[in-house]
Length: 133
Image 1 (cartoon, helix red, strand yellow):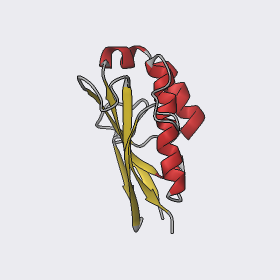
Image 2 (cartoon, helix red, strand yellow):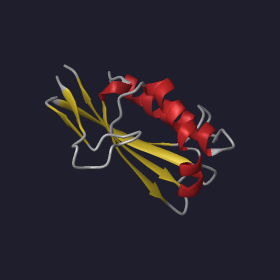
Image 3 (cartoon, helix red, strand yellow):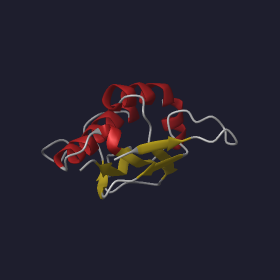
Image 4 (tube, helix red, strand yellow):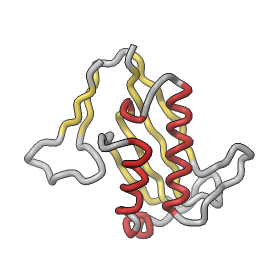
């Protein structure tokens, strides 16, 4: 399986995401939205950075259970109840990403929302991955 991250020179240089990701994988895993829920179903973390770290960790736990690794992630959507706060903490969020996932970035989008299913949640992440056979 190959994964190619595509960042055309005709587009602005991406920072913390890839413009496009291509794969020839035969197995695709769709990952449900994850918030900062602990094992008991309680939202943990008081700020967006803490909650992002737990939510991303939860997403990677699900991905690993399916047989994948963070590098297999093709696409990630981040839903944030306060996009301004999310952008303010972009550097810290980037450090969390690099610690948990490395330096390869999937195609990404950040979407501002009024609220999430878990009302105490500040951020939710949802993704799609391609697994090696």
